[in-house]
Image (tube, rainbow, N blue to C red; front, side, top):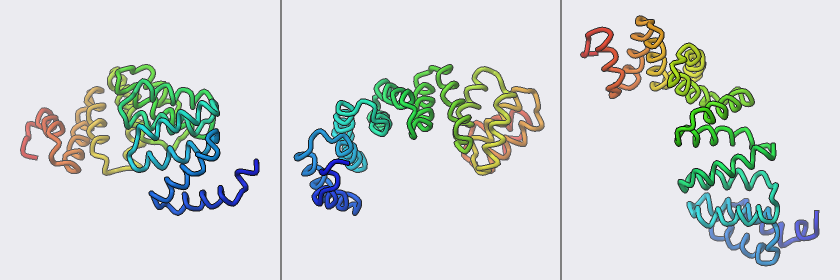
Length: 226
């Protein structure tokens, strides 16, 4: 490690950063960057500070500066991607997450989540399915991937593939009303009406305002009073 990173000024600045005082932290990072403008890690730290306080444009600028200095800096690609998502710049975000994945660094698994989500938003179902499948394979505890995968399978009328994903999800989160509704739709798609009714009823119990689930119950049972 070079002398700058072991110097007292850097150590003091990092201590201020860790203490979390916004104004002092911003001043400390800006002071350090003024004396060492080509330090990619400092640009990321300042980007993180600005991001945490909602200053997204400036935050993205610092992540981009970090990447000009260190193009393979995985953390900067990931942070830039998340920043772009919040800014609504989905194409730019997708590119940043793709760069992060290509670098195969520690944050690449969560990049698949964002890539799946973005592709789902823009209607690129095949890419979304691919990304969520990789996320589920590489991070078995990322059960939110199950939800999106199930939706995509059901969109393709592959209800039998959706059901085990949703069952796994509701075992972990039994009060997830939307998952129960999707289970009902999957059973309905498989013409298993009894199971569909049970799932729609559970969805209504958890979310009485769900008009879709109530409508489906009425359709299958003729009882709109539930």
